[in-house]
Length: 463
Ligand SMILES: [Zn+2]
Image (cartoon, rainbow, N blue to C red; front, side, top):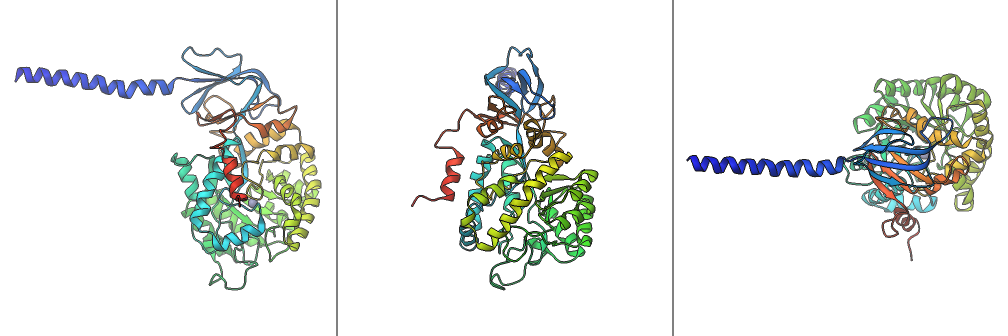
């Protein structure tokens, strides 16, 4: 018994040693810090870049950042050379589950494509977005006519669980809007083609009570943020682009119910009157805002409301204007003409501008083209960079954990060649992407796995 006891004891020691080896050794290797070096760094909030930049990353967090830092002995050094490090970009206005790059094709696909196939495509769009340097997105609406699926919630959860590669997502589920308004999924189709009129379960509301019910239903099903259409839009076939679509009483209910549940409110809005009423109701951001007059911008400034301009959406539509139905062409032209002056005024007046693109209207992964459009319309390059980092983090309510390169923040870091304050299009050539300490890419994506290729094929199948 004594001998047996000794053997047991010895094997226990061996087992314990083995366990220690298995548990400790790989963990130590994974925990060794990464030191990122680059010629320059934008920290997300400062007015200028710093040089000889070093960022030390441990596990999923930034543990140190600065100029000419001493690098720990056990650190893995990644020297990115003549590049600029920046917080991972954010896009406050995407639709990762949708593809509207060809309006007529999309309309047909609403009818004949299984929602599961839409969802599988969305995984490629998510990857393309992250590979382009966007580590966080606010995804403001996902709906499939006649379907009750919450594809955006499923995509967000799959990304969080590591099943799908993509940006951190804050999702809005179905956008809330009026019967016949911009978000009514049955508008423009034959009456009762889908068997019934949509209701609050699809975000369609016609009273303050309906609005509260829709907000509660969306939060119950996983919404992080509430989106509503308070004016008409370009891609809808039964409304005018700038008419108000929710009453002040409905907007008050929208903001009150959302804020009670600690959800921010983003509103799609082109028209000036609807924008004024929405800002007065206390929404957190105006999306698009094409026809807003200077007085409305002043109100926005006083209230601290964000403007999410989505210049890329208009740019894409105008570049392919002949492909859209005539009614949409007229709406797009009117909005495009108005938004140029509106945006210039907003910059001059110092309105809080968040970076948002409306990706889905143009191909996912091209989000960074928005930077140049902002700069072309009068924004300083450093302010455009700030809009996609610290500003978006503030609007999205994630500034405690990301949006700047600071000690203790999540290691969401990108690098782009050269100096983006000298050439803002450097943002379109991101060469390094890290999300929560994990390297997503370093150098160009391999052609066979490049999500951009997948996205291209999805849009234009080879015949
Ligand atoms: Zn949108």
